[in-house]
Length: 235
Image (cartoon, rainbow, N blue to C red):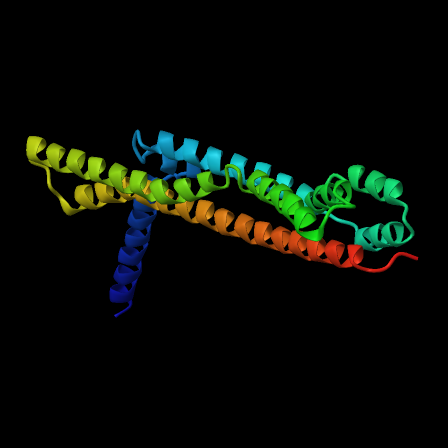
């Protein structure tokens, strides 16, 4: 019986040594970084990268422009009101000119027309408001275009990749499951990249539009308040 247990122990030791040698011969696969994965997406990853750069540049450029146009001191209209009711239009115009915002430029145009009838003043301010709105909306539509065409480029890259994959299979006759799955995985990279870029561009487009709407509301409120001030009796 003791000899049997000794034989079992010896066999177990041999199995452990064999497993250890086998484990030593197996090399751990290297992990791929993001750049390596994206580089496998095909030639259409280049226009997708350009679309991403364009979307980022347009978003931040428009964001800074809209933020600058919408910035306004909470006391701006109160100061303008005090100057108008006291008849000090020179000080009111000086304040409006030295305030680089959309609301201030609209108020400055209204101050230039003081003395004319109210409808004429309103038309002048509306013209300036439309110009300011155009300045804020300029190039924002580029984000919408990028959000639309980026997924299309991604799908196009996948289609080209699938054509290439099945052409190679028909040429070489190698159609193992691992090769097909690996090829599909690589070609889906362009689709995923296009969708991500499209989503980012669309979210940026909607966000900028919401900021433009807020600024437009500020301009309308300031214009109405200015007209009300003009209709008040002077001190």
